[in-house]
Image 1 (cartoon, rainbow over the protein chains, first blue to last red):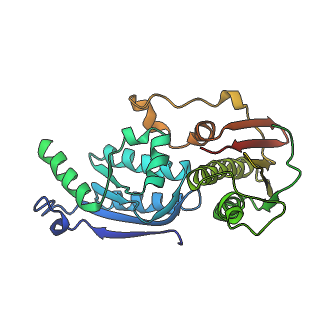
Image 2: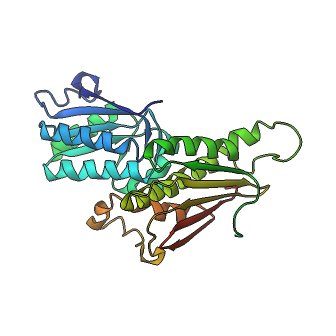
Length: 133
Length: 156
């Protein structure tokens, strides 16, 4: 699959946990397709930079359709987290594929990110996080 | 690990990220799916690696070639990067040769502990650590004329 990033607003009605994020314009879902490597990394980085500059503070990064990730790809994910936290935002990662999860684990990044099974679970977690904040 | 594999496949790819996917596909096929497809009797034989280890192989090769592309990019060297692969009964050997400026392999820091905030500064430089973690052997020979990385992957 050719590398691409699709963007949509985080749809509160999809979350099973209730009216997540209603009235919150800063929630966005970025769906990554293809191989997240040195070739794809700059494209994703640019999308994240643009979204944060445009006001996004909660980004759900959906890696469900990613075929491959290496350290160049993980670097962008780490960079996205740093960028969002610097703006008092947060990044949630959706990664159900064991092959992709394994790369996070090999770099110990599963202890930095919670890897969610789907976008709904990430949205619920985001809501919980904000309730606690 | 002895020097240059005498049999197997050899790729010479331009030092551009767009070719990473091709290298992974070719090496993955040579070490896994292609060998398992079993083109009959003769030279190749069965792949020693299960799909999980083929995935590890694809990852460490991607890291090595990524480093090679970056190294040559630093000095603008247009030379093609050589990727050699040999599939044996009990292991797969891959050699990646670049014409970058070289570096001191001993100066590459290990990953800081995950519990420290320092960890999040590592947006790059994870590749060498990954190679050492995933490969059964990872040798780096580096000098002013370039760098050779030799990787050995054995069954999980």
